[in-house]
Length: 98
Image (cartoon, rainbow, N blue to C red; front, side, top):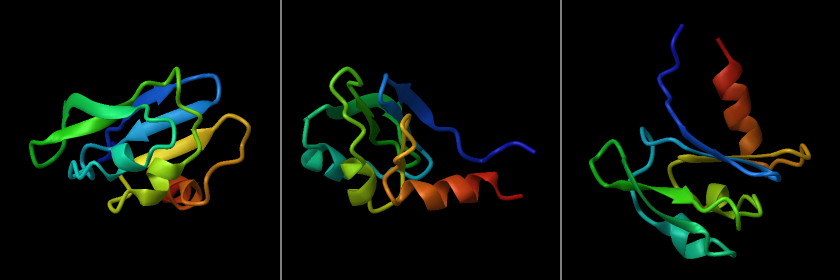
């Protein structure tokens, strides 16, 4: 069974950052709230034809702020140390459910 979600995935030594263009509306709230200012507009388009976002992973601390403030659950953060931001857990369960 194919997944209907096709994230753009970015990774560094701390964790993984996934953006779901099917959910992103390009509001830019994650860019505004990122404490390390590493999120920027991407050349990938969202479902509505506006740019999505992408991180410059070299500076990303995978804190989860972007995931927390995204009103559309279009960002998922997964830390390599297993200490995922709280909002990451429901998405993980949702993605693995039949």
